[in-house]
Length: 615
View (cartoon, rainbow, N blue to C red):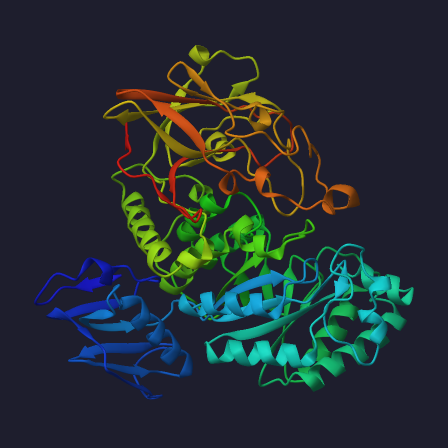
């Protein structure tokens, strides 16, 4: 953000915009209540697509935008400028995005959500200038689109039991979502995953999508969809294509792509996947492919989804990771790099869809993703995204600034979303470089780390430490207390993926998960309440194709950010906090340890713990 200060210093709350605007000038040392908004589209304005200017003149907000989306984004900025009294500063803003596509994807094929919930997400997306909703409408369990030509596709008999059988979106509901999104500057990109992720199809018809009979069925279904949903409303069509092997992949992809283009749609396909045409938009989802693109570029239109899915890792850590991510390896679009698509694939069955956002950190993840893909500019390499930079460095300061802005949004705009995130980057740690199990702490080499969520896999990679099947690690920090007191903190020794249930499960009764231990001085701290399912849900291999664990929904107690915080007794003066953090089984990517002091209000909403001093 380029702040050009004029007659006065910009008010603190006016610096809290997410994403940061390209330019903001202070015009007068005053704040006013807006009485009128003069908002117009001026196609000839010297700005890129979606660009706008916003100027506060007296009690009037004057907006000039390149297009309709620019108007929407300007009004979102105006809403963020208001303080708690409804007053705005006298400023002038010029703004536009670095990348033309900033999308959020949800997999309704595996876990259906009602239209009302989608609209809540669309409101959030629009507030943060995210301009595309990728609606993954089919997956293994079900086809979620009304089908008139083959109504058996909506028959619960052919869908996975327990996965919202019989639930789908009517064409009227789909058109309603599209219209609602369009009013908020958002384009809907529907996806019918073909030919993979389609067990429901084989169960329904007795043959697969890529067979001659299957393609005949698909053609009728797609033509019905294209007739019901116009190209004007949905100019892109996602055709899936990944994680599948078929006898003639070229023929199948040409069939799908040609059908989409014949009906005025630009096809989008996952990559790696079946071979897509150069003009098809490639959605890159492999990190290794993303690393190669960052080095050598890419000569097809593409979207960056290799930043990581929202259902992986830890929502608090992901907030930092998305903020640091270098979109498409570039500072701004080069014509091929269209932008990014932040995907949410909760593969495990969900029995309470109101928990999807909380378990996966939608509310804190989307603003961080928006900051990266709207602002662009130079950011961090993939290898550094999971680690807080050293205090005093440029990117540590930028992260601290973003955390301040996000905390302001949590408390002033997002309170009703019950966001499970607090500022945490400034927490200092001495951390052992992990060693083989049984190594004593005094025999280990120590290093420094920062943040409330420590990813030991990334620490190993950074320091050239071989990741063994099982390992030992410790982390320690100091907390100062003016008097004997008790603080509360999120504590966790794993961060289970919501994509599968590979994890060491819930701790034995009275103990932390994954054999972790926590000490405040000489006092060992145990979980704050009895486990509901002690010792349950231990799966040390991926469970994607194992129906028993995949159909067992997660509950709050397996996620440390959803649990009741632990009580940490402190004595007057400095207190040493120590955590024993073992890696207890191979294959896991969940070796992530959490210690974040929090305050919980009477409604259960969290905020930063006041007055905590670390060393």
